[in-house]
Amino acid sequence: MKNDEYDDVLEPPINFSMVEDGIFRSGFPQPSNFPFLKSLNLRSIIYLCPEPYPEENLEFLRSQNIRLLQFGIEGKTEPSVSILKDTILEALKILIDGRNHPVLIHCKRGKHRTGCLVGCLRKFQNWCLSSVFEEYQRFAGVKSRPTDLRFIAGFDIMLLKQCLYSIIYQYQGYGSNKRRLLYREENLQKPQTMKV
Image 1 (tube, rainbow, N blue to C red):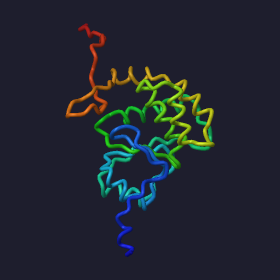
Image 2 (image 1 turned 90 degrees about the vertical axis):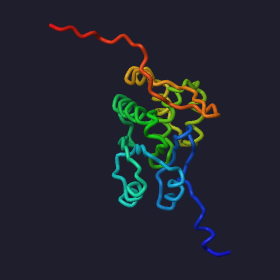
Image 3 (image 1 turned 180 degrees about the vertical axis):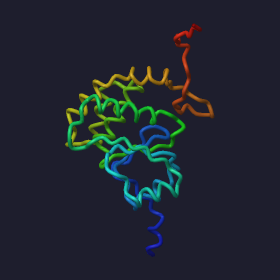
């Protein structure tokens, strides 16, 4: 066997998985993962760590025209619930906007911060809490954090729905029943303006 045969092997980042059609999760991508990421045709990356993105990774993103959206959540310390709630809410707005898809969510290991964001997405998708926790624990393993599970359980998805006038799930045709996130403004009663 020649070594050239191994050049075609695509290596995903640690803890890589598909969350939903057009939404992926993983740990921090290494240069050896770039060919795999290229195959996903990513439009955006949601990076959940406060540390600067390495220059080598930035060069790859520029070469592939991938937008980097950074939401700096501390990993080792327990951030205040209000700061974490606000940060997760902002990241969710980006995540559910189909214009950003395909999108990769990642932190360092793809466990806790990524697990919190995906867990809140699952609540938005009306998953039962036991299934949300099961998915979180599948990626976090023995390092599962009770504080993360409490945060997910307490996250109020109505904040997101109110903020975006209701982002809804619709089934689109195209010969399949794939779920897509689309914007649609409901007939909400809006404040009336009066001339004075």
